[in-house]
Amino acid sequence: MRWALVKVALAVTTMVVLAFAVPLGLVIREMARDRAFSGAEREAAAVAPALSITTDRDQLERVVASAGSDAGMAVHIPAGDGQEALDLGRQRAADEDIAAVRKLGRASTTGVPGGSTLLQPVALSTGEIAVVEVYVPQAEVTHGVGTAWAVLAGVGVALVLGSVAVADRLGVRMVRPARRLVDGARELGEGRLGARVPEEGPTELRLAAVAFNSMADQVVQLLANERELAADLSHRLRTPLTVLRLNTASLGEGPAADQTRSAVEQLEREVDAIIRTAREAKPQTAAAGPGAGCDAAEVVRERMAFWSALAEDEARKWRVAGADRPVRIPVARADLAAALDALLGNVFRHTPEGTAFAVDVHNAEDAVIVLVSDAGPGIPDPAAAMARGRGSGSDGSTGLGLDIVRRLAESTGGDVRIGSSVLGGTEVRIWIQVADRAPASRGHRQLRRRRPGRPAAALKQS
Image 1 (spheres, rainbow, N blue to C red):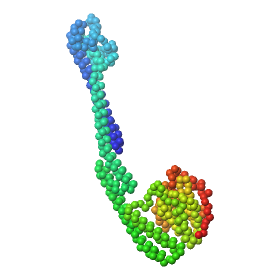
Image 2 (image 1 turned 60 degrees about the vertical axis):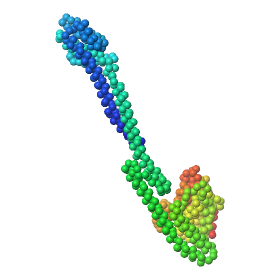
Image 3 (image 1 turned 90 degrees about the vertical axis):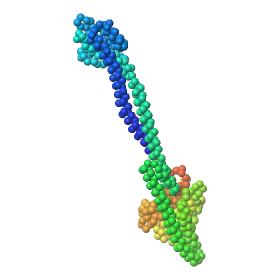
Image 4 (image 1 turned 30 degrees about the vertical axis):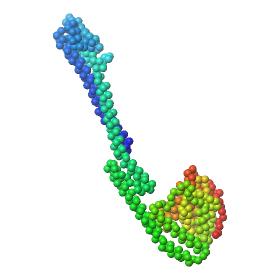
């Protein structure tokens, strides 16, 4: 905006200066020319009375000399009444021009080398027409014009520079509040909720700053309300959790009872974490720094061991492949466990009992791929399922499970794809980026080339 104002001021001022300076310079040039020829007319008029009285050469030479312009004046008297033609001074005009002025009886000017001449007709006592020629040098015609043009150019440059300086100051006055508004919006977008903008500058920008500050206050208030609501809702879960924990004490001993107690304890920990996060106004998942993350293979083995008991009750075959060696990923352990639980929960919820499922872990050069597949009926519309995973829940699904998985993958620069599995049902592919050396699309091509050779561990009956 600042440079736009400077350019506009420069263009407008330049046009105004040219519109006034050029015509004024032309007027000054014409005035100098008129001044020079007016002087020549006066010199010619000084000789005219003498010509009307006498045509004597000696007397005319004295008159011309007294006029002070004998070097630039000439007198041409035609022959008549027994008198020969008389020419005094240096003739510069052509004979044709002199004859034309004598015939027309009207003064005129004509160009000659080095300048111009004024040809003034004068009537003699004999009735003939004499012509007085006054030479006007070019330097006299243009005297003072160069200086005037220089003065006009200086004034024009000064006006242009002054207008540019004023426009620049006005631009700074307008741009500074706009930049503050941009910086405030950027800070607010980065999560610094205390960002505010000084309400200064032109009226429009001042109103924009007021609106921005009001919006920021409203955002802070809405976030505070959301945190309080999340904390209150989570706190309400404590009562049913307490009942479940008390009921688990009566389950006795056994693997199923131990897993139920473990699940209740884990649920209590998650609820506590939600309450703490909401109260402290901190995100639940922070960006992983150097050395952060977890062993994906270990988390997969742990969650598959948890779900194996339910798989045994429902006569489901299951297998795990690629989890026999450490696979580091830049994802928090709790986040990966939540994503796996969401996908495995969908398998148990949306497929008939006895349907087999599998979890494969592929460790590529720049990414880790986790595949959760089943032998169920499949998903007829994967695009609609992914849409529900983005918050448009429908068909009896909230989409929360896929949303958890999607956010986990996208936090690393990866993504989630839904397709058909080799078991005949659905395959959910989680692409977790672990390096920035190659784009995700390249990794997908590597995955498609490697899929035919992926581990084919046999399904296990737990």
